[in-house]
Length: 203
Ligand SMILES: Nc1nc2c(c(=O)[nH]1)N[C@H]1C(S)=C(S)[C@@H](COP(=O)(O)O)O[C@H]1N2
Ligand SMILES: [Mo]
Image (cartoon, rainbow, N blue to C red; front, side, top):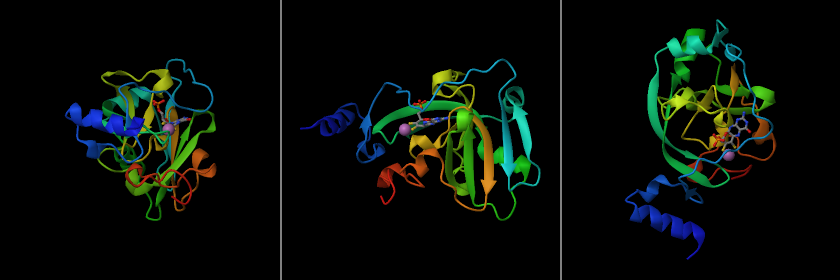
């Protein structure tokens, strides 16, 4: 029996529903760190987030303002395209759709590009970043998000591969076309559903 089969068997033994693990993935209890480039550091008050593009009223908010908005604390399974999954990760933040409501999404908007520090970008349909579960997160397991995991603020969109969840997010751009982000230009899937293994172009 190979590594992936053993891992799936272990899930059963631990009383976890193997249906939670997408095909081709293995479960880890660690929290791997994955990104291109450097980890940004921010001085107090330096980080902010802009909502822009096809909105009536673009705006920029800082961390204090974000934390003053209605927050949710939610627990998700996350799935990286490099094949690790982690179950029951708990995040606190503001629903992306609440930020979008403040900006006033224009009728033609269909897609979003997440812009992160140092030019990392990722794209997804508007409908996928405005679910109950899609958040702008500022806490992980009740603590500030560590810089290596995207702190002070990252996106979490748990139902897509984790590259769609930008760490160090700085802007959300509403668009009327689907524009490929960093990995999507480099061979990764435009949508990225882990349960149908949409890893690469053509999957
Ligand atoms: N800004 C930025 N966000 C990013 C990435 C990146 O390279 N830069 N990598 C993505 C990928 S591929 C994954 S799997 C997750 C990893 O998050 P973690 O390091 O907290 O596990 O961040 C995503 N967000
Ligand atoms: Mo990833």
